Length: 349
Image (tube, rainbow, N blue to C red; front, top):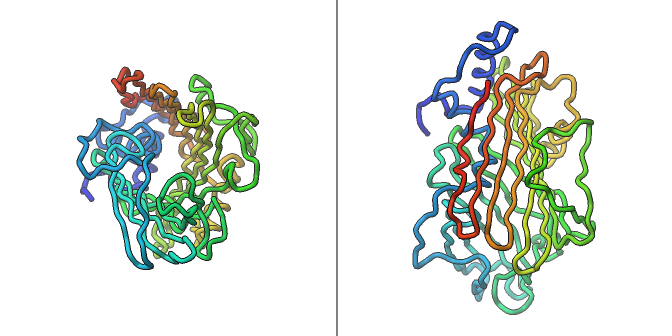
């Protein structure tokens, strides 16, 4: 952790307050400092940077392509490990550890840890779960995610969380996916669609029975001091929708994410309750919640490898709800992976 201003998610609200005072209610006249901009980018735009990725890392001999099979351990307690550079996005590393849990019943524990070498604020993302092997002895897409006793549950995760340098944790939960029996199938998310938060208190993406696979993931990131009576909690809440269409081996992948930052007076202790309760505020905007920002992210990868990520984040006036500063970013590569647009965020006052 550094000692710069950016180290606290709570500092975002200090930035917004400073801008509000600078504007005197008649339009913002102040400007963000370099460190304040970095604070916004590190936390409010972190979802965008995780999807965008960074400059490609050099491959290593130990690198593992996640589309290839990995040999499962032969006995309970034994492990196999592997590593993949530039996965799930360029500029990221993922290490996987597979442990035999109940090999006789084909049950294994899988722990994936992703690191972000070029992102100061993001330490790592851990996603762990149990799998039930289909009997071939390899980790591959024929295995099913399950609970500890082998009951198939494709939404279940032992842990799914991202650690930040300020000490906060982003907790994620797979709310639904096509394989869980819900018949969830989303239409493609237009990469050129609007970057505007939907009106109303709920949002449901359009359905499409041609979708190969779709999922919905909710996440929350909470920052506050439970020992400080005067401390409000700063909370990032988001939902990410994802869908695949076309060729099963090389589908078009698109996603749409909505995210808000707000403050509330008390934390929610139980993790499952925390995620379900706080995501209720994402679109409803309860009266006692002070909204500080809104973010929309669109993502697309075409079968030829062309990738586009677009985002818009607005810092909001807590009284009027109007935008104080808007950050936009547009990342794009061609089908060879060459960057056409760097996706550097631009602030408009």
